[in-house]
Image (cartoon, rainbow over all chains, first blue to last red; front, side, top):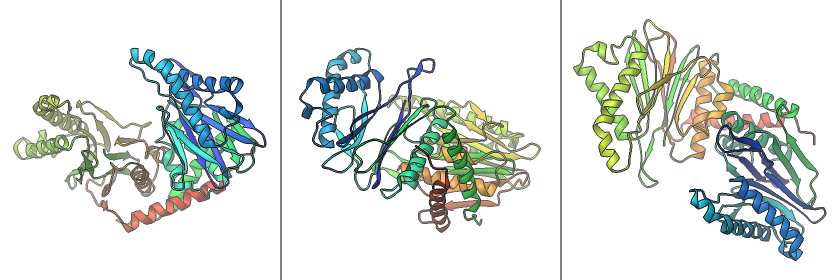
Length: 242
Length: 242
């Protein structure tokens, strides 16, 4: 399993992913699920991958190879809009599915790679997409300001309660990390390290990127303070009169 | 789907259940999933039911009929211990499964009723059990102080972070209600009214029972205060330095 989240705010975007891959409990490993394509001054594009690792790595591999071989306007580095970026990612997914799908099917498996894609290209605002395994996709709007993939349930309520489009980047960053903590405490298939980026609107370069590994001092202090803070809130909530 | 939770604390027990039953989105209804058997001065036993409604109602029906027909010591009203109560519930479940199972199987359905059973009988401490559809069961201990059934994930992190055996009944009651709110905001198959009981240790009668329906003033004030409180906590948590 996996846990990835992309959040679109007025001030910027936050994208984060865990690093655990597993095929059963005795076969697990760490792989980074975040890929960033950056052209400082022009564009920042981040992909968060979920699903079968062979599939997601193949898609990223195809996207990279095309950057070397294809006209730049037909790659992530030259695409005119984030919508075009989503289409290019979907095309690569479909190419891999076409190549691998029938072999997977022979073992009753399916191509299940999916992506959260967010970023900004000069000339338009920030945009956030969720691309399904079939290559179709949806875009975050005013009502839905974030997308999750993988093991989404444990970490959803805290996001729903705290984050709106107007939430400050700093507060939303803390909230995303608490959402990961909620998930990792309940599900062993989501694990450290967590990769986190925070993109500031109209910056067109990435200045804030962090990796949180086991025992990270900030992450520990944050989650400890969250537990203490929530217990405090419960003590102050109105009492039920029976 | 369903959401039920039973919590065992030093001070007492909290048991709560939602009321939504559904077979598809255009066939949903309200049924109480909480059944209490009380002999003031001697015992309080509460059952929370999950799974196919025909199955859980049949089990409760059998338990009630046996109270009228069998020697009292072989019913929930005369059983010597809560362990014996769990066995009697399991027996009723297996009897219904024996009767209905093969007919369900013809439609590719299975008997999937399950129960959380908690309470106290004079002569022993409070006890809390989770009985699986097969009739086998587990009991809450020192490490695991609560059981959930149904749509458990959304409401789990808040319980894990706030409730320990030593948590006061009043705080745990608020936490359980927030856990229901988390679940209902994310999953349409869990719905009001919420039935909640709070049993005080060694009381041997039930003095605190509440039903929260849509728009309940206390529930609304509680969840509003929780949202405001958590946002406040996020503002006070340590900032990430990049």
